[in-house]
Image (cartoon, rainbow, N blue to C red; front, side):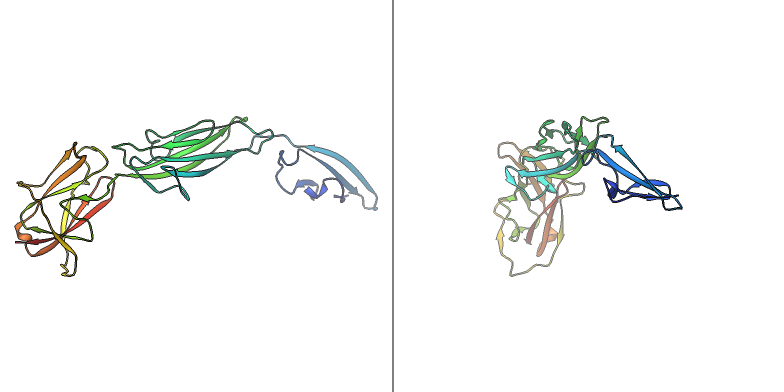
Length: 284
């Protein structure tokens, strides 16, 4: 006795292996919820018998899918999720879930911890998937969290999208009396130079990486554009203060008399991992 599938009904979706009827692919209720199959039995004398039957597919819940669209920073459309943003900038995007179940399940959006917790202030609309986050003062570093979409099927299934974003201070450059690169600042060796800058507000005094600021020598180049430092201060050593009126930090950099006739680069490395630099040429 042998078995075969004549070219009728939904037989093209199946095959016979020995005495077993097998489907060529996984069943999908949303694509087809039933199949009509005819199996032909043939004996050794060549006589045949056809048996027709129906296979019903039981619906099971399919997991939703999730994409991120319409990414904006301060209302400006971005090509993709950014790797970083600056404190005070507003990041928005739309989490868009889809569900193939018929009828489609109701989808709910949420945020979940990744390798770090969900950043304070980040929020998502549970019904629409609209996300918004404006990192405030003091919130810096790398944040990894997840956007999750969950359906109301049985059982509940979900999809997630991992997001990693680094938040930096809002540094816009050094203020006078220092000129920013590529200008070389001329100063008297041994003087105390006020290094002024803003981070968008008062971030406390623990704004530097441990061991910074530092300076190191570099070869002087007479062709570099240079300007004289017009303001110095009296100081016994280097120090950091915050001026709330000017909304500026002032790092008083106490230089050494031994630096006369040399060029040095000041490296200010902040707690957010970024470093800012300024060049100096020292005279006696």
